Length: 78
Image 1 (tube, rainbow, N blue to C red):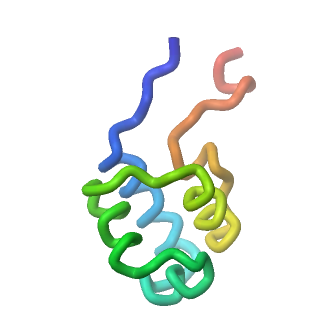
Image 2: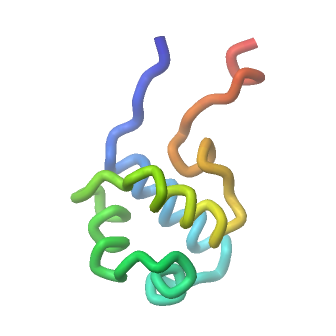
């Protein structure tokens, strides 16, 4: 059984991806169509990111959904 990551952990991964992409929260909000206040709550672990939001953040930061959620891949379990 796979472990699920806490909301705060996903927020940390999103924040790291955002920094690695050289974006600020405002730029990420603009690129994803997610309000800056919502992004702030997601990054701070106060709100769980919905799948469409994670997909948009992944696209904007050049990461995969698995990287942003800490989900393992089939290769990780081999």
